[in-house]
Amino acid sequence: MRTVLAVVGLSLVASLGAGTATGGVVANVAPTVVVSAIDRGAWAREIGAARSRSPSTFERVAAVRARLPELDATRRGRLAPVPQHLEHLGSDAVLALVERVLDGESDGALTATARTAWRAGVVEALGHLRDPRTREVVAPLLDDPDPVVAAAAAQAIARLADDTSVALLAARIAKGELPVVSGAGVARRRPIASALAALLASRPSTEVARAAVRSLADNGAAWAFRTGKVALPGEESDVRSISARALVATFVGYDGEVRQAASNALMVVDDPSTPALIAAAKSSASSDTIAALDQLAARFARNPAR
Image 1 (cartoon, rainbow, N blue to C red):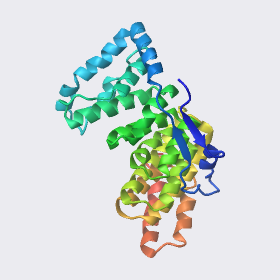
Image 2 (spheres, rainbow, N blue to C red):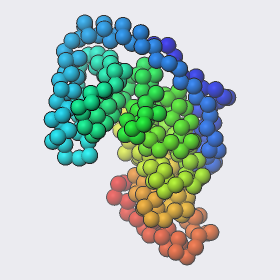
Image 3 (cartoon, rainbow, N blue to C red):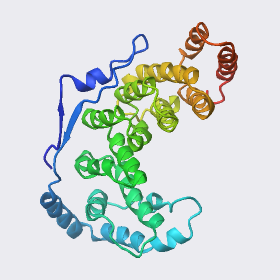
Image 4 (cartoon, helix red, strand yellow):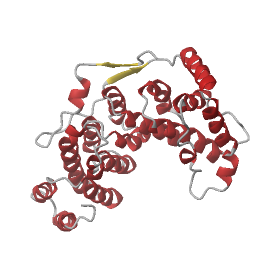
């Protein structure tokens, strides 16, 4: 497939990742990222060849789709767990799932929850395969009117974790796009931490701030870096320190649900700089906030996630 994303601007990824343990975060200005059209003809040829090679893979996807009404009717949560039924599809799974993404879902007999579960579930399953060719197929779904599908698309692109994918997501985080803010954390990359930190510094709405905090926790999770399965392990120190700085500032700047989310996120990130950041924040805080920071420091000292 031809390259479909062009980043316009000088050293975009480097500038997005400029925040460090000793520095600030980049300005919340959206760079320009251009997404060109999907080459449907090329995909159709590859899908046709894959169907000939591995018909059973396509049959397994079709079987899950046939069960969708049943899965929807018996779901226990908000949506049927479609992704778990699309695991271990065998060879050519990428192309079998790409076919479904390109085809969309036009069955008018489906309930709204079934349609969302299927469309988002296929994208999520595709994201777990981490094939960079799929970015051009998934990127248009960032603008999908269904926010669950758009968030699944953001997560799928974030799992690629390459510089082009990260730049695409960071540009949209800078605009405060809630589905992208919600889904980008699985990238576990420095530019995503910087973009989320800059967004929080702009004092977004409670809803966006809460999503950004949770995404920072995901992006900077200490446990994730311990697995050794992140794209760039060398970014760990910066990712976690940028996250901790932004989360302490958010804890001070918000109250209620956002403050609690920031406290929880600091436990997940578990950065060594956190006690010093809390102490520094107390110097200019109100008496009520100082008391809250003392409680946060005590909680961090006995962090159960450590």
